[in-house]
Image 1 (cartoon, rainbow, N blue to C red):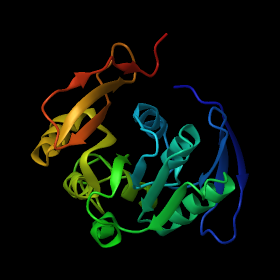
Image 2 (image 1 turned 45 degrees about the vertical axis):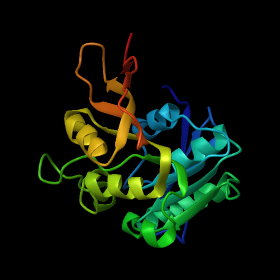
Image 3 (image 1 turned 30 degrees about the vertical axis):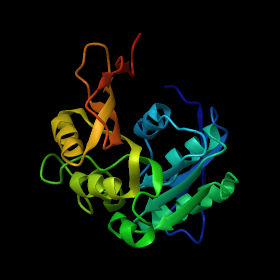
Image 4 (image 1 turned 180 degrees about the vertical axis):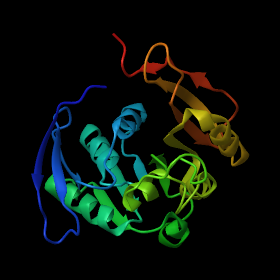
Length: 241
């Protein structure tokens, strides 16, 4: 999915690190994000495009980062309400500024919080749809990102898949849906974890970097307490001629 992105540099004194400003022209969204640290990637845009939202859905975005997915969904679906949660303080503060910068504070409520506190914050079954781009790299395999902020966002250090799926099951009402993106190499772990918690996989789409290369990412939609039936969608090739 091609995006026209214009980048400029600026500094916000009240945020501890330098940030850049990008413009997602397809959605008329301005995005501030750390110059050095966690920056959103094509993963977020692929997931936002994959999500199926119903009118007046109440959505929870777990691990919102700088708020890109929540803002894209708010722009695409003007009648939904979104709760966005981010644990890392600097990212939460940037996400809050992004929400205000794009005049979406009437649709998106941001919480600087750990997902483990979701049961303290919300009643069980409060949400219609949950979306998450979780850290899917194992901290014990491969190299950790050098920047600590990026490492925490991309590697299972502060949380893991089991915690995310457990929080998802709690927060969704029966029949509610979850959409997420994950490493294709760990697809078996994801699908098994979802089925163990009765978050039945319903839609699946593989993301390939090229026509002749194996899939690197997987998009999955699950439904809480639903029956067994999985629809496999055509794959996406990011760099096809």
